Each structure stands twice: as C-alpha cells, then as structure tokens.
Length: 413
Image (cartoon, rainbow, N blue to C red):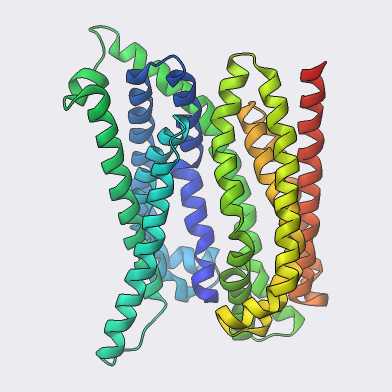
C-alpha cells in the first residue's frame, strides 16, 4: 500500500503540469461566454485548451515512461515504484481528455456529466481490480500492487469514454453533425486572430494556476517522500514506515476526505458562478456565496467531526480490520471543518481572480506541514504529522476566511 501511495506525487505533478490550470481556465471562460449564448466561442475555447493540454500530456507521458527508473530512484527514493510509474503514465492523456471536457460542463453548470464520468471511473476501476484479482486466484497467480495501477488506467479510460460521448452529444444538439465546419472554423481572415485571442486568454489564467499547482505539488511530493524517511528516524523499519504511511494515505485519509466530495462539488460550481457575478458587477452574489459557504461548510465539518469521533474506531475495524486506521480517523476528524471551509473559499477567491492569494496561503500551509514532517515526526512519530496536518489546515482556513470576509466587507461598502 505504501509503495502505491508513493506514486501519487508523480501523478499529481503531471496533472498540475498538463491540465489542472487549463481545466479552470476553460470553465471560467466558458461560463462568461454562455451567459451571452455564444456557444460557438465556448466550443472553440474548449478545443483550443484541449489541443494545448493534450500536447503537454503526451510529452509528459513519454518522459515518465522513458525515465521511470530515474524518477523512482532519484525522486521517490524507492526503485520498486518504477514499473508502477510506467503503467500510470498511460493514464495521463486519458485524464487530460475528461478534465478538459469536465471543465466545459462545469462552466455551463451541467454537473451531471462530470459526476457521471467520475462515478464511472471509480466503478470501473474497482470492478476491474476485482476481476483481475479473481482471475489470478483461479489461476493460482499471486496478485501484485500493479493490478491496482492497471485498474486506475482502466478507470481513466472509462471516464474519458463517458466524457467524450457527452461532448459529442452536446455539440450535435447545438450545431448538428458538422461541428468542424460550423463551429471550429471561423469567417475567412478571422480564424488566426480569434484563436490567438482565445489562446492568450486561456494561457493568461492557466499558466499562473499551473505554475502554482506545480510548486505546491513539488512541496507535497517532498512531504510524501520524506514521511517514511522521517518515520525511520523515529525508529521504524523501512517496511513498517511504508506500512504506516500506506494505512494513513490509503485507508484513513480517503474516509476523512469522502464527505469532501460535497464541498468539492460546491467549489467547482462556485468558481463559474462567482466569475460570472464578478464580470457582471453583481457583488451581492459574491458576498452571499462567501457567507453561505462558511456557514454551511462549518456545519458539515462539525457534523463529520462528531460522526468520525463516534464511529471512527469502528469504521477502521469494519472497513479495514485495522486499529491503526481507526486511531488515525479519530485524530484526523478535527480537520474536517477547516478543510471544507478552505476548499470552498479557495474556489471563490480563484473565481474573483485572487489566485495569487490562494497560492500564497497554500504555500504557507504546506510549509507548516513540512516543518512538522522534518522536526516532529522523528520525535513523536506519525502523530507529529497528524498534528501538523491539523495546524496547517487551521492556518490556511484562517487566512482564506480573513481575505474572503474583507472582500465581503468591501463589496458591502
């Protein structure tokens, strides 16, 4: 489990480089264009962002596949991750396809398609891993962690397939079957100018966002790589350190993060809503979004904290047969209110064009966590990291709340 979790920084970094900023940029500009019913420009925006992101994603896939051994040894400090990296690299273009398309549907506020694509990804991923495991048992083969990575690639392909069908149906409904001729082409003499303008607008937002995400993911990768290393300084063996790290990231954290599916959906929807309100000068909508986000996310967070405190140990045993996972769930339960509020406020600040603030706050939060990784884990073990997660989330939430409330106060004045 720990070896599998070590590959996540590479996947997260590749996502940040290829499509993270572009998805947000597509969503923002599609939102502003659909308010004027300019559907052709929206599709040209999607197409332009798609071409840019796919070019980068294929280059990224080739690099990871070719230099997987070097990345595993030099970057992840674990040579056993090399074959997993080669498999994971194949999923990057697929993730790029459905991320760009999802950005379009978020922009037009049709969340059913992204939700369906994500659901299909998870169902197909889990189902494929189970089928592979079942076949191995009947053929007396020993299952390996590579099967989980293969399941990830199959899941991404399912999500890509659903998203592609959805965008084809959408384009056919709006423009008929001749999309390349009627939509992607421009009047004679204007094609270069229009696509140049679209590209500049997308890159103006996507490049800073991607750069921010890359820097943040590099820091997160340092954190992920050094947690097992610092646990060994605490006194654990290499296998025990990876096991503890795997339980934390593969068992406890997913359960804590499960309710955040609600707040993440709200966050994705808030960005185009806030962007559209800001563009039209409707500051009252922005203020209401800020106040309601804080109020309802705090209610959800405290409710989840109470739930995990009451049933955390039981969940750890029932779901994973692990007392350690249950213990982690209890400690991590306290971050819920702060994590949910910060995620929605980050989206609002991004929608208002305050990407520099969310970047700075994320960096500060990560530096707090890294301080606990390097100085607290060797003394208190994994508990030092859990305390660091709580402290960093509190800092980020406080900073985001102060900035958001200042904007709210300014808009009222």
